[in-house]
Image (cartoon, rainbow, N blue to C red; front, top):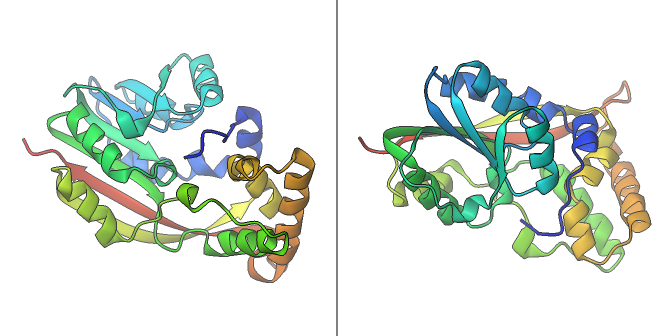
Length: 253
């Protein structure tokens, strides 16, 4: 992900609270057990990490955002700033967990290798991320609006939204077995509209383009207007065209 992305925990809670809220089924799939040691990859502000701790697990949370880690620590969590593309843990975790984070990490093979090394033999990795076709309308709207201004998103930082086959190939190459992945269409309400979504998730990419905060805000509003036919419901509410890739796998015993 771009190192210019900056997260505001308060704004994230207002504009993107649906992210952890919709991660509950993934926690259920993980089925954390009391006494397990779990690595939470991309823990954000720690809301789902708390759910793992509440189950009795000892959880280490990592995230690339100092702002989010600070918020997670206010919850009393064991959380650290770290790059999940370059993990250096030994085989110390019974399980790894990730929700709505892996698509930010362009070095998918680096993530897979690091998670594999961090798990004990027989350890499991469970999570969810954006999958093939995720947010297609939102990305198209952004691309079209930037094009009118003679700009384009840096391709090196566009999210990784893999197919089931591409995802499975990366993790099989890292050594994982029993890989089960599926794409799940999930239209998702946007409480602050398309504009709020863009201001939350595209700030780093737009900063990398040299756009001022005022220009970024204007672009977010323009994209929202552009996407009225696609994403605004008759009652005036907004919905994003999310497609999630949910997965589970194991390190051989």
